Amino acid sequence: MERKQHEKGQALILIALAAVGLFAFAALAIDGSRLYSDKRHAQNAADTAAMAAALAHGRGSNLSDVSTTAIQRALSNGYDDNGATNDVTVTVTDSPSGVCPANTDGKDIKVDIVSTIDTTFGRVLGRQTVTTAVTATSRTCASFEGPPFDGNAIIALAPSGIGFDAHGNTSVNVTGGGILSNSATSPSVWCGGSASVVAPSISSVGTPNVSGCYTGGSTTPIPQIPPSIYSSLFPRQPVCDGNATLSGGQYQPEPGKDGSQVTLGSGDADFAPGLYCIMNTTVGPYHGQLTGTEVTFYVPSPSFELKFNGAGNSFTATAPTSGEYAGVLFYLRPVFDASGNLVNSQALDIRGNGNTDIVGSIIAPSADVTMYANSGNRAINSQIIAYQVDNQGGATVSISYDPNANYILRLPVILTMLE
Image (cartoon, helix red, strand yellow):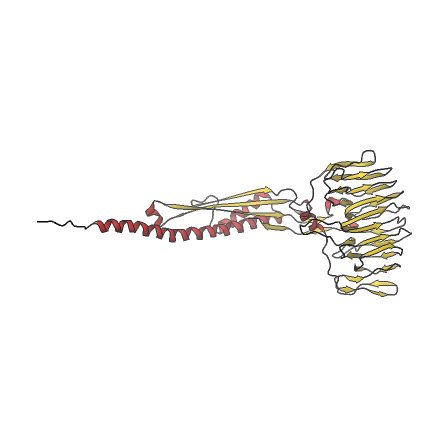
């Protein structure tokens, strides 16, 4: 008699194997979603902690208080710096050189949060806990109020070539601030022939060649200033939506407008206080007398050229003493290429103004500024910011820079989330 084998019990094995698979899928779905939710919450907590710490630094808190602020903000979101299931670490370091404008104090604040949560279905698979780790980094650059470019009187922004050049028989006498050349070429500052240069200091990226002709203070090597930094140091460019009117022999600005347009001819031009947009592409040699009190001249043309002829008081003007453009006398639009690099496409010649009164900054980052020697004894009270500065002639070019009468840079606290 044949006996049949029973298959009872085999289903239990299949059910057990299926249960393991079901628990694995359940762990993936439930514990995985809990892990994702916790990581997202931890990342938000790290982000807010890093930004809160950056804001604290921007408001003047010391480094200990900055770290405390980050930890307290993380704690308010459920993460303790020494908790049983999570940990918060705050690291404050100096920002890399050159990333904050005007050499302001910069701090990079990194917040790391490690969080551990208990599993549910994952325990069946032997996984009791899962851990997430997130990072957030913020940067704060402190506010700044003062003269741009460390208070130097003459600034040449050209990245290569000779930034500051004195030649012929000229004597360049600079007081109130030094000379800065952003050129990495050697020489970056040069004086030749019978020229002489007197200045409190020379700061340059490349090596200056001023042996035998420079008298004054130190020659100091500096890192090159990138366009991303110095472009933030220039004033706002006006819209030029108004039109200047000539009344009683004097140009008047259009009230309520952001710059009044005017086109210079060859004759005298006198300006009432205000902001004027010179719409010419080329002026000069200018044979008239350009005069004005409490005025700012802005040039929107990327290829502007102005040459004074040097006779008498051809340029006598003073910058505003209040308002947005306080201390700004001449402002030529900065020109950048598609890569963000400064373009040299303008020219400004100030020639032989022996009795000239010029008070206020000349901001011409894309221009070659040529200064021909004065025949008189009056100094130009200006901070000159140019692409290149060239000094020529047979007498003395005198720059007597007073920061209080020139452009003052005002930068707010800058907060940035890096990652």
